[in-house]
Length: 212
Image 1 (cartoon, rainbow, N blue to C red):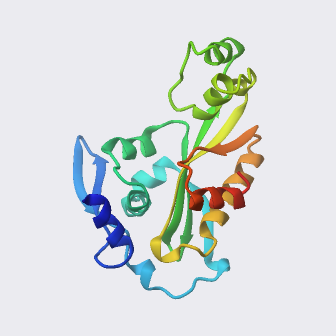
Image 2 (image 1 turned 120 degrees about the horizontal axis):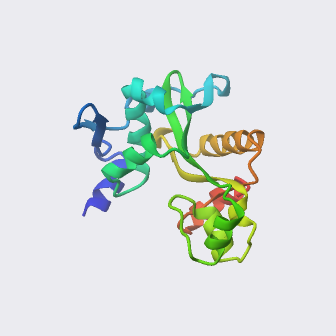
C-alpha cells in the first residue's frame, strides 16, 4: 500500500515521495515537489551555521522555492496531506511558520498556531460546550474537558506540526526548533505552550524531552 511505499522511501530504498505544490495565481496550479536532495549529501553542519527564524506568509509567497521546501518536509513527515493543508499554512491568520535553515536550505520546520484570548462571554460559551471556534484546540480542551473556565481567556501557542529533514534526524534539530519556539512564545507574552499528538513511545519521548 501507499504507507509501505512511503516507509520504504524514508528508509532510502527509493526516491523520497513527491506531492503537489499549490500556488494561487488566478487559480490553482499543480507542480510536483519533493524533499531537496542537496541537504542529504552535505557533511555535518556546525551549530553556528544553523539559523532558526519565523517565516512570514509574504516571504513564503514571494519565494516559492522556500515554500516548496517547507511543504515538502511537512508532506514526508505527515501522511495523507490535502490541498487544504497548504492553504491553511498560507492563509490561516493565527498560524506561523518557523524553520531551521542550514546554508539556505530548510532542515526542520514547524507550524505554530496562536490560540485563545477570547472575551469572557465567549470563553464561558466554549467551556459550556456551546461554542467551538475553529483552530483553537488548546483553549477548547482546557475549558470543555478539564473545566478550566480561564482556559479560553488565556493566549496559547500550539505546535501543530514538526518536521525534520530525514537526513538530519536524531541530531537535536527538532529539540532546538522547539526551544526556539518556546522562547519566542515567552517573549511574546503568551500564557501557555502546548501540542497535541498521537501517543507513540517515540513521540512521547520526544515531547517529554522537549519539556511539553
